[in-house]
Length: 238
Image (cartoon, rainbow, N blue to C red; front, top):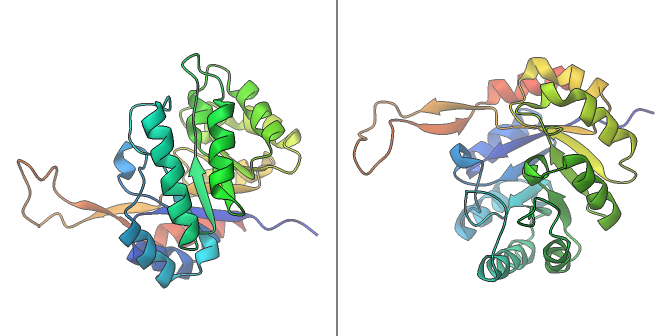
């Protein structure tokens, strides 16, 4: 029997979470600030999303800032505390990533965050694609026993990293390989054909263009989860 082809949607609010699950998504990554690759959401947002959908489907991105994945002691401690807060509230998983200044896996920090996550799913995000040697970091993640790795195969878009994704899938052991990075519904059959276990996309569109904006408020409009795009991605996954 073939394993299910999982589609994960990155969402930023309860409305997006409900829309994604209703359109057939298997699970969610909850974050804020998708325009910078995602940051840790507020605890109030997390609680609202956990009340809106099955908490087991919710994986919370815990990333304290943009600008790379090398963290100091204060940031590592903050992530540890946020992980515990998310898990205590019932989130099914947490999504993290840390590199050394040389671009390798920060094993000590990863182990600290694994301990903080306890029984929750531990996902290593696309920091792997920013590593000096993504393949070496992927193998280290398998050795460390993370539950899932989100990766584009080191390419700007996952569809351009098919060969690396296929190689990762072949040696992933019990680690789930999830393709993410510029995923479009049309890419999804090829990604699954490469052997990945899941795909990840934001499936978003812009709303609120007619609302006041300008200096101090950023550009007009805001991101919302588009259920039609989610449904298209789920259909493409088969």
